[in-house]
Image (cartoon, rainbow, N blue to C red):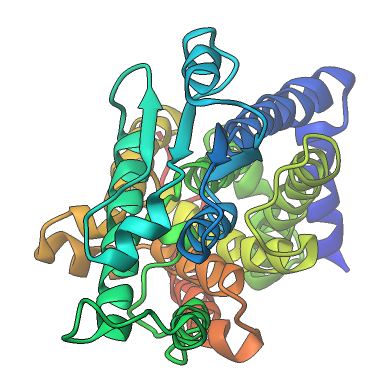
Length: 384
């Protein structure tokens, strides 16, 4: 088919030479993959918290076990250390913070007196301020539980079996969170790395469309239209070539980020590639539509600089979309980046194909409309 020959020619022009393969494919992919690896290592670095539970009662044990369940920290239990040794570890930089649960923690709580675990830290930061708030909240919850079991008579003995049953019920609540369409998940609330990948895809596609613009400027496209070829074959060949180049680049980038630099946004390689393929299709349509409205590759480059970065910002690629005003959140619905982020976010939250069907269909609609428009306007009759 003529379309396949046109597509293969575009692939050869992009990465057929050693220089093209290195500069157009390998260097951008490696740079982005290294950024993903650094981002992943930063996310894996958890604050080291050492804990000494000097209390032998049920409430101290419950507080210590609840700290172990915190996913944001790396908890090390140090029962042999005294309070001063915990402080020294923090001062020496061997731990980011230390928690000391006093020996009379449970006794005071059961008697109705206030007690709390001691938190030692070098300075106040956002993460340890959150940890301090967690400790205070847990202490208040335990105090309320003890007061509930004790009842109105402070002299009555504490029924430990009832207290144990109450704490176990609190540890396994019946109400659970459920995914909803309006929920901000892990990706949408922290989109930086995925946003960079989406912007990377847009820049690569604009590079491929730049070769098509060169054909139009040098009248190569005009000669193609005089050949016994249908305009649909020429347009489809150019689009297919851009998709092939983009797919090869995506496979390299995702292969490096997933299997070399060990970065994963919580979804499998296949799902990530599927969503990005739909996004790639929409961006090829967008780039071809923009290319049809300008006269030369210089103008295309200038327009891309105006479109790519602002649209990524509006779509929530670099910071949560919820930080923007309402009218800009609504405006984000007109950019494909927003729907790609939504699909990845839902998959990262445990969703399946039915959960991402709507975002993928919207990306496909973007592609159909923009590619049809680009096919109509990206013709050789407008030259520089």
